[in-house]
Length: 316
Image (tube, rainbow, N blue to C red; front, side, top):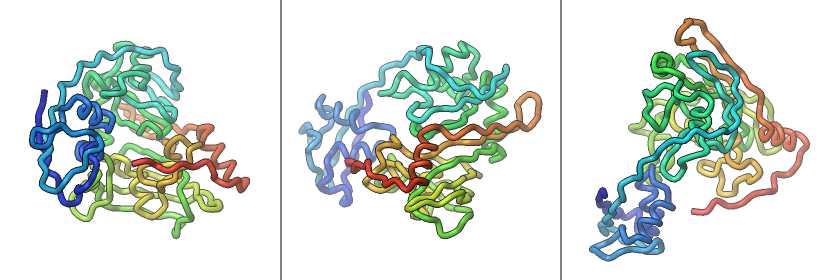
């Protein structure tokens, strides 16, 4: 069991303890924190707290974190849309709602479980036992093309291209509002949000350089259909950059308005094109997929002028 302490800052005064801890621990869900609270593992001056306990500046919150239970990956017969496959790699079209790799609280029904069933032992091991074959990733509710390495040679060669930004990644998205410019380039620093550690943010100092190119494809009443090309690949880069412009991605429950479009089930964002040098042949190859049904249905409803009414407010 690991132990650590967090001193409450003036900005965290009167926050609920589960909210504060989940914000300070970006890799920990609020439900996990609530389980620690129920087990009496979160205390101030030796007194166990509840999830409704309010904090005061200067409080020192002591947390005992149970050791993680070892995870054993299981192959699962989950249908995959395979765009391309050879002895070195695959390109798959990941559906919205599918997590890429297992993690605590999400041990199965992931892309990795499906890949283990499809490929068996033919996946690279560079990224560890929980992420076999995974060279890059997409967020759970981002759909689209993803490349997978079948061996360490391919993995290393593909990862090198990502590192030097020679790997082509183009997305399509629907954002709120009408952008001032039909096309442009967003160049900022992106890092962890200074208060909410589960979010990323544009930073004035620190962080890592993030470059996003965009072009408006079509405009609607209150929304724009945009093509986006990544020059870098920071966590949540497109979602953060579009929100930074004042045009968050439609359906985004993290960086968008408090009222989200429930029928989208998350951000309207699709990785439509990828291109890279094949690790063995040295040839440049490129793949472009179709827009998924949820995306085209949303575009169709916007084109018909249908009001976006099925909304709910994001809960803290």
